Length: 299
Image (tube, rainbow, N blue to C red; front, side, top):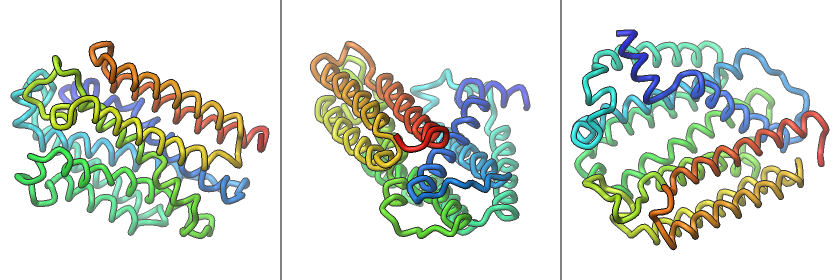
């Protein structure tokens, strides 16, 4: 079983990089909220690491839940993946997820200050895994699946924000918190749509946004989302570091150029590859902004 699970993690969800990502996501929102509220004296302990682990654990659970949900489709279209190929068994993943959820619930119930927000996050995740009890309706509609599933990223952001506000006694209803709730939602939305945009020659039985709406309209939609995303980022770092604002805008300008190139010739590259690079650079710059403020103060 352990060998089979290792195959799954290696190909579908590398543990160490994704655990670090969970900590980074938690840390980015945590420090952005604090710094924009003027808090520079931090009380970091085991709770922050549990929060980062919770983000990692939740996203891993969603990854496995998606593999169960899409099992029949994956057997037809992605038969080489670990689960549909039989190299990993459903029972392996079911046992692992049971242990993972139990550990995550216990840690949050005992050590965290926002258990009700955690519970809401996991209830929503459970409803997602069950297609909100409307599998036939949602599975057939890509836009409906997006509308019902993608908000989970914002709910996860609210989980982080709630912990931070409760721990430091901050007001929950502020513009900073509103923007922070959106700041990692848009990258997730942009990536989710972009990965289902293909050149006409690359379309298969798999339903994509480019098949439904055309690759040009789909790409323009993601382009608009990208500029909305950069607006939230700029507003969050404006009072922390003006150099970061310039860097964020330059990165978005580069991504805009790539979108225009793809619209002109969709065979040049896969747009999702460029979106992933944009996102990594964008989030890295947000983290560097936080680090720079902590080291040298406002610039």
